[in-house]
Amino acid sequence: MGFVEDDKEGVMATDFFWSYTDEPHASRRRQILSHYPQIRELFGPDPFAFLKIAMVVLLQLWTATYLHDASWLKILMVAYFFGSFLNHNLFLAIHELSHNLAFSTPVYNRWLGIFANLPIGVPMSVTFQKYHLEHHRFQGVDGVDMDVPSLAEGHLVTNILTKSIWVVLQLFFYAFRPLFLKPKPPGIWELVNLLVQLAVDAAMVYFWGWRSFAYMILSTFVGGGMHPMAGHFISEHYVFKPDQETYSYYGPLNLMTWHVGYHNEHHDFPRIPGYKLHKVREIAPEYYDSLKSYRSWSQVIYIYIMDCTVGPFSRMKRKLSTVTTNKSD
Image 1 (spheres, rainbow, N blue to C red):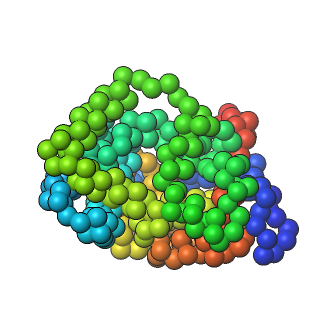
Image 2 (cartoon, rainbow, N blue to C red):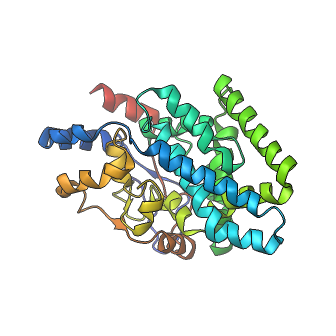
């Protein structure tokens, strides 16, 4: 893999790592399937996805109503230590649904995504799918993959303080970056997502008050910032080892995050539901055991903030022409 790296040790890079080859997952997928064709048997939806999502949605909505007259301190504490885990679970459920991994019929996944979106408080499930599928198809491609930070982020977030602020607000960067850099015209499904979400938000405020609604929003905000589960935003593709652009996490929080930590496995086989991704590594360990991986998302956040050589520019990028050329070979 070709890349350009900053020559000075201990100095933060002033540009991205640039690759002159295609992303690694398509070629690895072909190699693995040629050796282990039985992996295809893992493809298909998760039969328990609807039940798991419904339980979390109902629990979080009930918790919001329960806190309708609680103190703001209690709301904040419950949001950080409880609600944040539920809402982040739902965010990753929406990620799973963006790959149609609950039902074989895509429209059912879309409706379930809108349902899973309800406790998050802000409509995002339909728009997320639009951009996320491009992240898979054009990983790291300049101007296409909106998972990669902007040049402005790279130039502004350059020290411990600004990186700490960036981590706290990373959900906002993640959400608004594509709207500024590559806006897509909204469609009918985004309108449906918006109207359903506004109706539930309004009902929450009307029947139980602003504190219940604030609990949902806080659960989303704190769960996407300086929070153990939010470590996956950084761990998945931030380059800590220049010859590797995707990293897996094999810690216990996979049980609460639809196994999104198995990220190399997920990008290699996006048609396999999260709860089966560990079987990919078990079947083909020689393809994964040599890759750098993590056991702690909290440690990833700490390293990202404290390591003066790591920042928003610590991502692999490639030109669209590189992808086009390689796919035509």
